[in-house]
Amino acid sequence: MPADLSLRDRFKLGLDAPICLTWELTYACNLACIHCLSSSGRRDPRELSTAEAKRIIDEMVEMQIFYVNIGGGEPMVRTDFFELLDYASSQNVGVKFSTNGTRITAENAKYLAGLGYLDIQISIDGADRATNDAVRGEGSFDAALQAMEYLQDANFGEFKISVVVTRQNAGQLDDFRALADRFGAQLRLTRLRPSGRGVDTWDQLHPTAQQQRDLYGWLVGHPDTLTGDSFFHLNALGDPIDGLNLCGAGRVVCLIDPIGDVYACPFVIHDEFLAGNVRAPGGFANVWRTSELFQELREPTSAGACASCGSYDACQGGCMAAKFFTGLPLDGPDPECVLGHGEAALKAQPVQLVRRPSGDHSKPIPVVLAAR
Amino acid sequence: MSLSSAAEAPSFDLARGWTLSPEVALRPEKFGALAYHYGNRRLVFLKSPELVALVEALGSFDSVSEALQANLAPERHASYAQALARLADSEVLVAR
Ligand code: SF4
Ligand code: SF4
Image 1 (tube, chains in turn purple, yellow):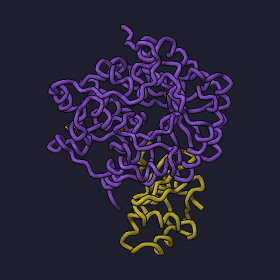
Image 2 (image 1 turned 180 degrees about the horizontal axis):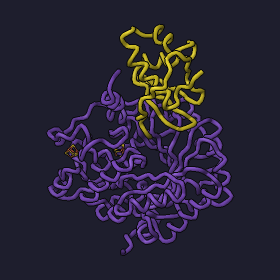
Image 3 (image 1 turned 120 degrees about the vertical axis):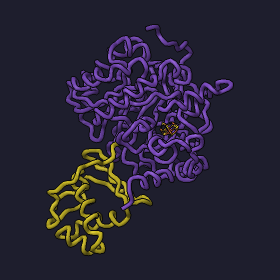
Image 4 (image 1 turned 60 degrees about the vertical axis):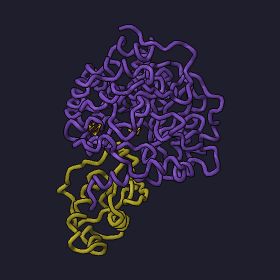
């Protein structure tokens, strides 16, 4: 039988339907996290209606997309949120939704605990109030913990605590772990990318080279930690972390945004990675199968400046989004290349070309990194 | 998502009948198929069309050995039996 490598090579050519489909239900959010990948805040008036959203779920059934990652914005602020959950559940489409926890109550926690095929991810970005609230805003840590308590009291079972690893919280991995254990939850760590509002804050938030090496060691020592496949650039440090270990953008990964726009990945909300819209004839399936952009992404890629690197097979040159938004060539090293080639490339840029995300739904308030 | 890294299951009995779990859906793909388990929510990749055909046919045989015999050349039996054992381990297959 073909080895794993050839399976990965086949994934690179694209699948008939995505494996990892993210669907952001709304750009509205009651928080204003300084690294928000979708620059969320205000609801977009063009947001998909309930009927349109249900049509997307129908398409998932037709395409055999078994589960969907729902996010936002804060998905729970949509007034039809529970209606859509019910509908997905009735169609056997598994849902994993990410929330800041502020809208989880004692009552709806019981309801959520009763639904099948449902995973919940509560986001925090610090293991203590100060570290978390500096990124996610005042009161957000207590709100998230309150939500976890509600879920625990309702016997929801194993929910997930989702953390974006930053320079400020990289030393708290054991504390996050302890917190997850306390709630019988699973810990999920993901990578910070310079996407959305992260374009402006990545410089201050992204882990140092030493922190990345420590993180790799920690992940190897804690293989039951979920990572959403996001740290494969660290594989250049040694044995690969469990996962698909490739950039799946447009091949096995994609995003449907709140207005139905389809992007190659949740971290590249930018015109250059916009494949089409689900409102067009043929719906999502047509975009996935025929868009020019996705066809291009499924073509074999060159390793560019990474070609001479012995670690390319392990690391694949890292994350396309991270390169794009820091202005690096897509066929070269990741800005966080563990061999330091990305940092060198960033320094060598004559001007730092920072690309702006196309849609910005931030609320008109200044987003600043609170002093620590 | 987690790739199935299930260890080999020596207890997988070739003399018994096995079948695709009713909780599992298969999605055909060029490389073979994706198997999604609604119960444990794991995604497993069936890495060849032959394996998919074997898994789909399995339920109509009284034993795995018979299914292997009917579907594959003898020199491939061992590796496919191993693949089936791993699928049993990740609950894609259940004993009949
Ligand atoms: S040079 Fe490229 S392939 Fe090598 S470790 Fe850095 S990013 Fe990965
Ligand atoms: S662009 Fe980055 S985040 Fe998106 S699929 Fe590729 S590696 Fe993952």
